[in-house]
Amino acid sequence: MTDSLLVAGVDEVGRGPLAGPVVTAAVILDPDKPIEGLADSKKLTEKRREKLVPLIMEKALAFAIGRAEPLEIDQLNILQATLLAMKRAVEGLSQAPGHVLVDGIHAPALNCTVTTVIKGDQSEPAIAAASILAKVTRDREMLEMDALYPGYGFAQHKGYPTKQHQQALIELGPTDIHRRSFSPVQMSLL
Image (tube, rainbow, N blue to C red; front, top):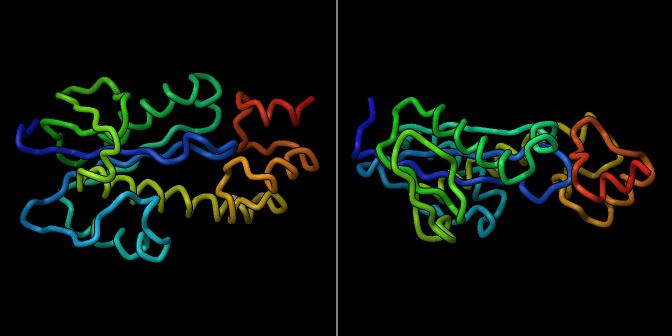
């Protein structure tokens, strides 16, 4: 059952990296349990984001993580994979929202009304909460990938196309978590 009063915020992390999934989160905040310090995840320190995650999980009415794997990104393209991950996050919520606010200009097709909000992670607390959950989830996963694939520097750059990462791609070649449709990864295959 959909509650027309419930509004979920949705955001993504990881569209630009050469490796790893794109991770999304959907959060329905409880108006009776405000969370101090919610902001765009990119503007918060790692320590602050880590402190906010348990508060979000404890105080939110519902939250869920969605993702699209590198193979899905390669098959669909990054935009379509991101929209799929967003849809998975919203569908994973324990309570169905009546309305969804999505950060950016693109929104997935959902079974409720949707509004896109440019820089929504700066103006909408539910989107900010989603951005924090998505970023911390993805960052933690990339730390695990650093242990599985030594030499790439995933712990430092989280898969983004830094000089260090691109040099590792040339020297070591792509891993199973690299996005083969992204040109720097394609170049390393030549």
